[in-house]
Length: 169
Image (tube, rainbow, N blue to C red):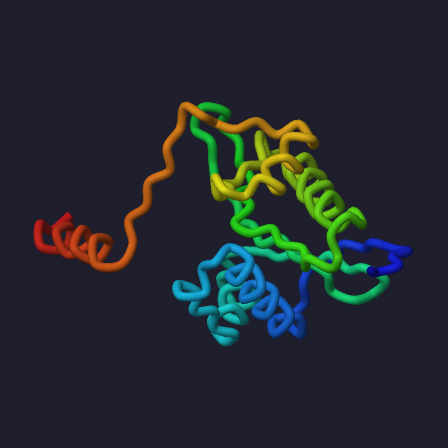
């Protein structure tokens, strides 16, 4: 059991890339998805801190030690005509849960969303992850039951891209 005294959330720094990579691998293990997790530290370095960053990361620290992270990026709502924040990953190490790290990460994301003029903060959660769902609902988050997530990846994504290139579009 951890005897926590302080939770601090801070933006990730370049030197944190190995920590972020480790937390991503821990998340994949928790979600039973290690077979599809190919986290590459060099790619993370480039994508988080390179000339064109694609995402941002917050690190949640418990008594000064990294305990969790939130990786997010901006999206855009045409109906609201406002940017939004999409939370790609939120993870707190199991031994660091119940000390407020997850709530502090989400609270900082909410602060950033409001500060940046965003209309919403949204994310997806695995349907089997009842602890996370309960946590989110306790904070006032609502499931978007009328929406279904779709994804193109791998060969179907590449095939569609080729069809666009072949038609000159």
